[in-house]
Length: 481
Length: 79
Image 1: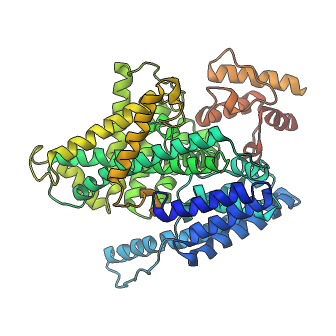
Image 2: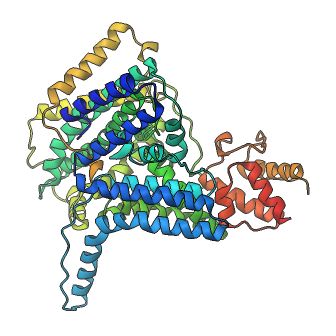
Image 3: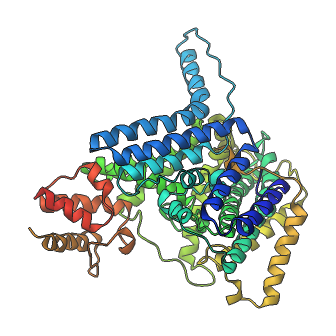
């Protein structure tokens, strides 16, 4: 059930009615409804894997309580270890078994060792990478004494399977979402209206920008022997597609949560306007970055603190390797993570990694800001080729073809007007986001700047474009992670 | 050493490491209250505090701090 599909709209309309009008006065029933709806939402895709989600939730629920009640630090650590192993095991099995078999098998072939291993036919359970990280953060926060585990199982299970953010995040921490589940909710008209605007903007980015870019990038990345200019265009469009797809999804998730009275974690803060790579990562997939920062980078950098800046560099490279592996079991993701880790080296050595940059205040960026933004975008775009390629060999082939051969020749796949239209839509989208970069999303508080007529033109035009381009329903890129 | 004296010294270390004379820490301060305090400068701060007090923190205690006050308590326990 995709957010941009008819079954979801029907599902959510029924849910919304029951949630506010039937169970609106009873918190426990409301939470129970959230829980049932989340399981229906998940089971719609594949009900078998629902058991896995319930299993992970059960383990996390009981071990959270066990860690809290444990008499000493050793016992807490033991329970945490059991929890981490039990929650991670399904993720490791479903996501990495075949990668492991293939790696061993190719190693055997290299040393001419005559054993042939067969890969297993394994289907990756939807959302597993996301909910696993959500459960892990619960266990770790309890062990660190930063969160008191809840006994109310309805609240806990609603947290662990909360449908707006279940499939592709944001990865909500217990401290953000659980207190909200425990508090009675009142329908806030302003929140709900702005939630609708956020959904509209998310849908626009997904259907109008990401899906159109996707149509082009599919051809470019799946055809061999192309030439420089079209390959650069492909990398550029894929970079735009990744952002509009994933941030569009996140905007929809956040907007849906706001309609039912929740404020969930922000996931994007206009990352492509960042002036260095560190700023980019603080603004891209923010819930994952802060997860990795709290549970991997910070503990590692503390362990290596005697090695000075190089300790931080080792810590950041390991953190990004984990991030790469989290995205997928493929060497392309590992190399992608390694490159991003390496991008931080100059910043760490100069002591400028996290210096909070002031956001440009002008209507347009200054020349220096502009070059920083373009530079940061370019190094991100460079790694997106790895992110999109099926194998390292294909990615290298892509890089190689960009620099060799003719820059301007070869097939175009689509008529010129189509490229122009996509480009114009991209420019308008990013210009609107630039103007609204101090807001949560591009359609927030438009009344402060625009008249009611201008606003309605923006809303109706967005809606019209969504209608024109909807139809060829496409999955979200991050669903496969 | 009194907790308040420890807090004063920690404050000096913050001013020195983060190069900002305007930092005023309280027991309730967290990284959200100090602009320059982030995951990288955190390492520099810890190293400087350990040097200043001639102590060594354990990873479990560092990860359990919720605010500056809890860090000060950890330091007090080691002096």
